[in-house]
Every structure is written in C-alpha cells, then in structure tokens.
Image (cartoon, rainbow over the protein chains, first blue to last red):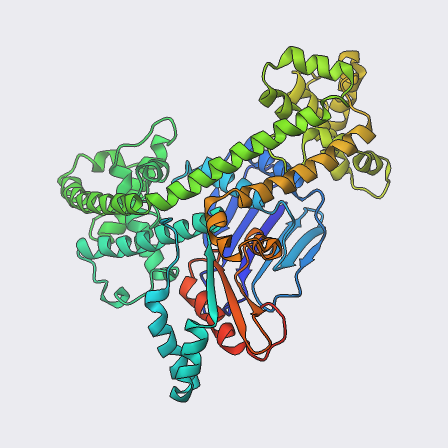
Length: 126
Length: 433
C-alpha cells in the first residue's frame, strides 16, 4: 500500500519555491516491514520500524477518512490551498481525496496521526 | 499582548515601496491609501500552522549551522555563502553534510543517538537502540571517506579492528575529536535557538492541551447524554469495569471525537457494507477488525485461536454470550454517531470561541453576531484571504485575514500576495480573494 499526502499553496508557483511544499509520502512494503516516507523531500527509509506502529497508523487513517467525500471545494476563493490524499493498493486500485480551500471537518486529525507516527520514530527530535 | 501577535506595521513603508516600484510612482498615493486606510489586518494563530512554522525555522537553522560546521573544520564553503536556508540544499552539499554528520537535521542529542552517522559514530550511543555493528560500519565508512585514497588499504569490516591499533588510526581519531568539538559547539548553538523559539512551542503545547481538555469535557457530556439509551448489560458492565466518567466515555467513544470509534463499526452503514457483494474483502475485514477491537481494547481481553483472521476472530467473539450482549443495536449506534459528530462540531466551535485571542479580536464588531460568525468561519478554515466589505456606497474596506498556515514558511510572500489583492479589489464585486 502506498500513501501520498500533499498540501500545497497555490498562492505561489511551485517552480518559484519548489522546496516549500508540504509533502508526506508513506510506502508500506508487502509485509509492512519496509517503511519509506518523505518530508519536504527528505526521503528516509527505515526497515526497523515495527509493524504494529504502521498498522496502527493505517487503522487510524481509515477511522479518520471513513465519512470523507472524494472532493471538497470552496469556489468563493480564487486562490489558496490545495490538498490531496491518495491511497494506492497493491492491486492497483487508487482511493483519492482532494480539496481546494475546503477540508473535511476532521482534517486536523490527519496531521495529528502523521505527527504521532513521525514522533514515534524520531522521538520528537526533528 | 500575545507573543504571537503578527505586527507588520513597521514593514508597511517597504510594502508601499515594493508595489509603487511595480505599478509606477504615480500610483504611490493610491497604494498608500489602500494599504494604510482601506485594509484592516485581521491576524490570528492556529496550532498546526505555528507547529509547521517551527519545523520550518528549525530546518533553516540546522541548514545554517551545518554550513558553519563545514567552514569551521576547514572546508571551502564560499560558494554556499549566499544560498537560502529556507530551501533544500543541492544534492552535492546534502551529500557532503551527510558524510560528516548524517542529516543536517541531526543536531539534537536524541537524534544523534538514533542516527550516529559520520563523526557521530564516535559519540556515546544507546546500546539498546543502536546495533554495535552498525556503529562500526559507520566508522569504517567515515574513515574511508575522510582519507579517500590516502591510506594504503581500504578499511573493511575484516581489517577494522587491526586498523584501530595503528598510528594512522590515532591520527584520524585526533582529527575526529577536533571535528566533534566543533560539532558540540554547533549543537550548543542549535540548543540555544530551540530555547529562543520555545515560547512559540509553548503556545502550541498550551493550545493543544486546552483542546484536549475541552474534548474530554465534551466526550463526558456526551456520555451522560447517551447513557440512558445504552442497554442495561453494557451500562452495568461499564460501571463495574470503570470508576471514572473519563474511562467510560473513552470506552464508548474512543479518544478523539472527530475520528471513528470502534463502536461505530456496528452502524447500519457498516452492517450494509458487510452484506454488499461489491464491497472489497479488505474493507469488510477492516470492519471486522475494528469491531473486534471494540471487544478487545475497549471492553475486555478476549482469547482467540491463534490463526484466526479478522472475520473469524470477530465471529468467535460474538459466540460468547457475555460479549454478544454488549453489542449495541445498529440504530442506537447510528444515533450515537450523529450525536458524536455534533459534539465534535461544537468542540471545534467552542475551542475558537473560548480563546482569549478570538474574544479580543472580535471586539471590533461589538454586538454584530453575523460578523463574528464570519470571522469564526475564516479562523476555522484557516483562511488567508481578503474579504471586501462595503462601509457605504462609495467606501470599501478590505479585511485581510492572515494566519501562519502550513505554507512552508513563505509568510512574507503570502502577505504581499494578499496586499496585492487589497490594492486591486476596488472594482471587484463581492468575492473573496
């Protein structure tokens, strides 16, 4: 399973500030024993992370997105923030959620579980 | 005054200069008027944005210090002197830093213990967490990198121990000790920077704690609200197992009001999914697994046959009478879910409406509840935008809503962008920009 979360500002061009976008990518190996993530383009591979931590993250993720629609958009705003969440399954199926200046009500939890996962790995050191 | 109050008044003359430079000096007076007299700055803070900004600031400082480290140990960094610390290093610099100290982020003692790369392999490490063979490998890699052909042989795992007894190693060690002294100074500077930004971290921590406290209150209120509709068996069970309302409410609703609880997997929607042939086995298994969690984690430890999958385990559980009677009817779960969603919305609202910052800032609207509601919506959505407001037929005031969002630190760029809208919105009909 592969998970890509992206939040980017559409106030400025991506090319102008290529490194300032928020990008979180999580790849879980076949037996959830290889874990790879990218935060602001710093790719880290970790084959020591325990399966329990990743399973917990994935379970939490599905508990958060359970009622989500596939798209959220606020057309009253001209520019602002776009976000995208993709879950790619091993069988090739892609589950995708996105939005522009509008978010699911519980969007804050997505950041929370991501931070918890990273804190658990780094002990809050980054 | 909140330490996080964003005050850009000192920068406004430069903003006017910048726009006059682009639009032309003949427009300076118009630009000045629209920025000074027709724009109302409504700045506010949010936990996620500040938290992300702190991460950005730490990254910038770590990049700056890692260049300083290279310079201090005698590497020519003149070509990197003018680079922006707000952006990632190029690949060659990233690699160079990585060879000496691992990631440029690794300045804190905890991180060093986790990733002892480059010279950090000679620092004390936590033997419980780090494999000694890994440390040895890092030492070998660093020595080979440092000496790059100056040694008669390449150091390998096989000859490393013997090499450690040589004078060559003694000389290398002296060099490494010197580098480590420099690194310690750099780490100290990083620590001082962390202290400097600690008040902002305190804001994040305090606000996060305030939200948790409010969430606990809401969850407990919700429990009292639904307690009467729970089957007697479940209520008696919860009373016998838990002594506090906190424990009972968590057992029923989970920790987070905005996240689906284990109990909610017994809803009609999920029941229908289990009966739907078009729903994938994966998704069905997830429902069974979460239902099982309800029994195992929230209610009681259940023994299972070791090879049971999610569905089999769930079915084993519900064969047991003492467990079966604790399952709520789907319609009760649906009702709980509805109330929980409402409670979560109230939590978000109360969190903002009870903040000192919000109460202070909406004072300008007096008793105008509609305006306060609009402001609340903007804050909830973390909006950064211009909202034009007609004061009278001829006059328009632009409200510039600004918060530090997850924009990777590009604050000046974004506020200039919004001010650009404010200068230009005189003819645009009511539309947020």
